[in-house]
Image (cartoon, rainbow, N blue to C red; front, side, top):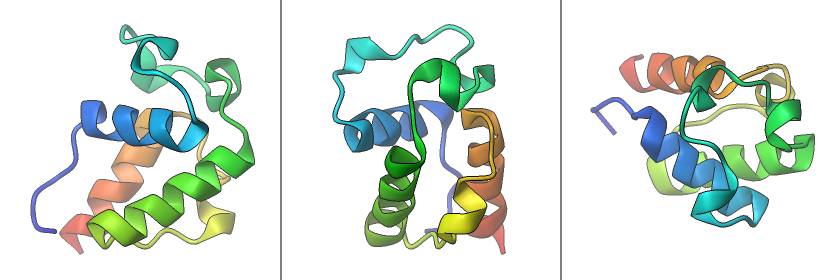
Amino acid sequence: MSRTMSIEELRGILIACAGGEDGDAPREDFADLAFDDLGYDSLALIETAARLKLNHGVVIPDDLITEVGTPAELLKLINDRIAA
């Protein structure tokens, strides 16, 4: 994958991996809200890492994905790995 991922693309992946509906996650300030505040636990984040690897070729180890605190931090990590 050569292009960067947008916050909206990541939002859709996170919602799908958490088993929610599109309306479940707020759109405003979504990127800067803590995963805890959004209701995402470590299992949802690990599922997100698996989906990122399978569908986008982006490998993020489980121990690293559970250390990020917000979607913005995760998006930066993803895009840094895409660019590498």
